[in-house]
Length: 199
Image 1: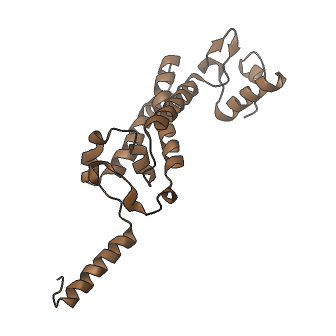
Image 2: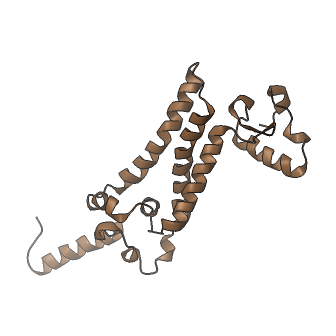
Image 3: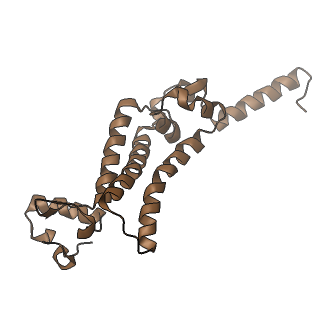
């Protein structure tokens, strides 16, 4: 962080720039290695972030836009995250209560391309190219963008009548653990009153 880009093959140090440009390149410096061989140049100027980070930021933007159009508050992070997917596509996962697997397994799959490309590059002599870096960065940014959007959107306090207000695919319901215990206690008490037991 705060390294002199000129001493690493770049044409300038961001600390020598005007205030606005220094802010942009300083922001890039906080997020990125800024290696000139892994960055694009426009009109002889190195971009403030590498090509993989450009892909990541593009994926973040796409995910944020998608969530702003399709995403809804569904009480939990996983259900809010899955709200961007058409209900028909995820109904089976809701019926089998596998939505956590779908949500977080799907996010994990979006991270695999950057883990493979970046990991192999870090551990071997393999050197990725600009196109591969952008293409592998987009899914990672998309996954992070969806997760952040769902985290900001999931607000249980918005449901004044509790989880029964939440509309989920396949008519699934959110049931709080305390509600399940109360229901079981009520069933036991009513069975005792009838002279029957649940054994």
